[in-house]
Image 1: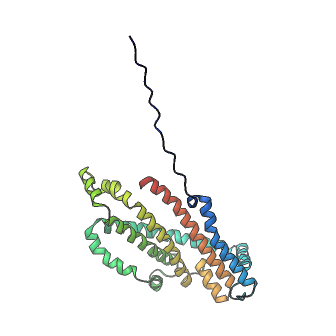
Image 2: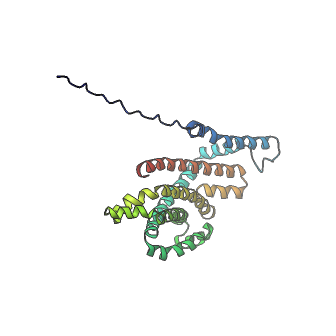
Length: 273
């Protein structure tokens, strides 16, 4: 009695993973991103050394670095930076959470859209500086007025982006969710949230940039500490080197906070998208 030889299945061939393109590599992107700042720095140094621009209008980069070192040795620089970062993070957190909550009401409810959208659209058009006198009268010159102004700035990008995304979720997905018995929180968690996560991240990025803008508006007018105050105080005393230092620090801090948000974005998209 002959027995058939056992058959051995060949392992399934796996396609090789696509190699990232040249411009997708981290090292290449970092190097490319440093090109323009280095060009600007070189041009800055060139126009100051050759005397094309007088030093009292544009001091050399080394002078700006020396101004930063002097403020750091006095301890004032770190205090300015810490206070500004604290204000931005608090205002960003408060404004973003409020924006997400209101966007949920407006994006998921037609009644909420009809009741709230016209008023919020009008308030969004109000310039940031227009809020400053009112907030000072209501909340006085303190942390509350500054954080509130930053929260207002962070609110509208999140609200606008997320509300629009919720209104444009594919209705076929919603109908499919209803067919499976989903409703309320289960519908939101299963259907709506994965669909709007990219928009949430985009709104948070815009809100963070807006928070830094509103920070400067708050500190320029009513503050005794912070990078906005350093800008205003340096302008009054004619310290162009410190003005440039404050601008560079604002750019660096904005880039660092945006990079931190980018790391959170990758985790969110991996989890929900």
